[in-house]
Length: 191
Image (cartoon, rainbow, N blue to C red; front, side):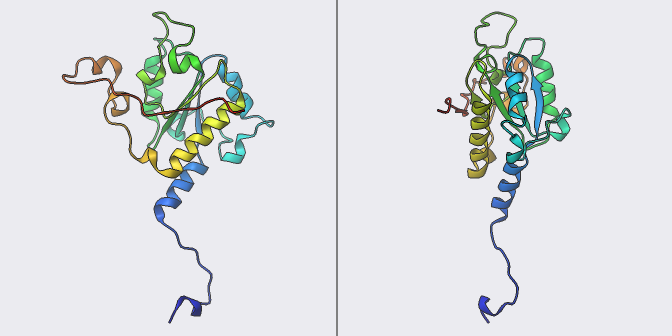
């Protein structure tokens, strides 16, 4: 008795691929807009660019309902613990997208009040460049993150650093701790 004799249609596949598809197709971003990049993030969710076609039409205000944190704008030293707390409250698996040059490297604000890169606080999966990045650049970064989820690169989370649950102040007191190099994707501006 072969498969030809069955009277019903059915679909086969790997459960892992189905889970990756579901994660990729239903990412819900947390709203963490801190500066002018947040305006571009809001524009990406509007009708002209329509993030709903990627399953991301609902920006969540609660971190417990979100799995993607888009850090849009500069992060001050006072906001850093709040950012980390929101990240810790998100459910696993969770991803971080650093939007704009201020979130990625501190931008033009090279002073004591601004964190010089959000990757010092939370592990970043994809960087979106620009000052501010256009909605197209944000969508390109989101599609890059979707591709990383589809290929399974993100199932192997980074060891050590901010991704291990250690706060920045605690990392300096751990004996033998070395600052890990981020393994994130730097996205270029689409043409």
